Length: 179
Image 1 (cartoon, helix red, strand yellow):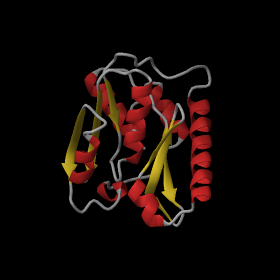
Image 2 (cartoon, one colour):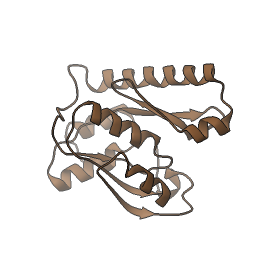
Image 3 (cartoon, rainbow, N blue to C red):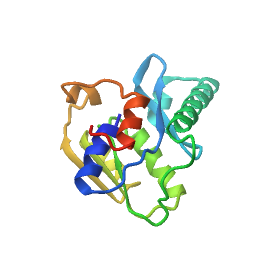
Image 4 (cartoon, one colour):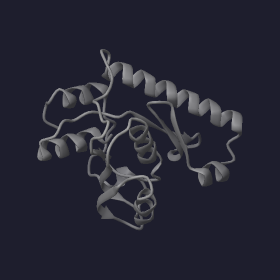
């Protein structure tokens, strides 16, 4: 969902655009609430408080993690059939998301980049809750959030139009088409 926003940021800054694939692990009966997230390089990040409060059994959580990990692998295969992501070792990387609700996918992205040997990692997002932005300062070198709102709700409620972004749309943006 962050790729259209990232395409605008990359264009404005004159920097290359690439995608880092992470996937939220939603609570089964409330999928927008993140138990955690998984990412490339076998990264798994859990929101311990949500996991505990949800009562999701450990074997069910393991199954959700496996399913999300397979989805990450499938998306990576579709977006990068011929090779891996851009080389980030030692480079400053800006992670752009369309909004940050629990921070799970952002933390997963930071973990993937740290495992890849990146230089400073910056998070840029249009909207998030102040407490989430503060907590993300522990895994990002800088957090830039244009609008912090106490009554956050969901990312989609901060947009006039908020549809799922298709793989085809992501491919077009990665190929340089305008957002």
